[in-house]
Amino acid sequence: MYQWFADKFVNPLCHYYTLEATLTYGVILVLAVWGTYNLLQKLKIKIDKRFFIGLLPFIVYGGWTRALRDHLLGYSGWWWCSPPIYFLIFGIGIASLLAGVYLERKTKKSKYRKYFQYHKVMFAVGIILSLYNLTLTKISNFYGISVILLLVGIWSVIFFGFHHLKPKLLSLQNAGITVAHLLDASATFTALTFFGYYEQHVLPGFLIDIFGPWVMFPLKIIVVLAVLYALDKYCEDKFLRNFLKIVVLILGLALGVRDMLTVGMLV
Image (cartoon, rainbow, N blue to C red; front, side, top):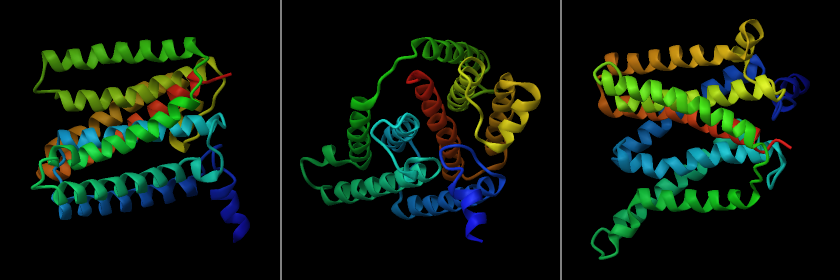
């Protein structure tokens, strides 16, 4: 039993995903999403601009830290591999949220209350963590970064342009989430095509073996737009709909940042 667990969950860390690990992490993700949803409702936190501002540095920090771990820069140990790293950062983010909510409510009648709004506390914690990462980051592969940014720029023009022409068919919110996932697709395509990387995830790896790295683009577009369409059409609860869209954004942006910086720090 121990050997099976080691082969399926422990040994693959930082290298690849097994089917068993993928399914298990998927269940854990669902439980984490469900728990966070209930916590936010209990705290009466709205899924709005303030929440996004507080959350954004943690999304970037997660992907950034994972890239540094890939190059053994400042981080070592299995807990900095994915997905343990995201559970760890999730815990830090929740702790920052709770601290921010406590300080905001504690200083509600204080003249300093505007400095202790929960999203500002979260943002500050995320920025401090990211500043540490900045001291460790050494970009050397400017060609790789340029290719990724060029591809993302093209996709941004396409999707934000489509939003501008047909705002009822594609909202600004949905366009932004799709482009975030296309950052991940662009980074994956560049890494696999030009720099000899391999795909760690089971389903994308299977499709890439058949069609090639370019398949990441239609795969992301079809899946992400289908999920967003389903949420807009069938999820009548605005809070739940916006919350699930945040989850979709995190899954694309964190991986996109990680993959782009991993390519950028290639020695």
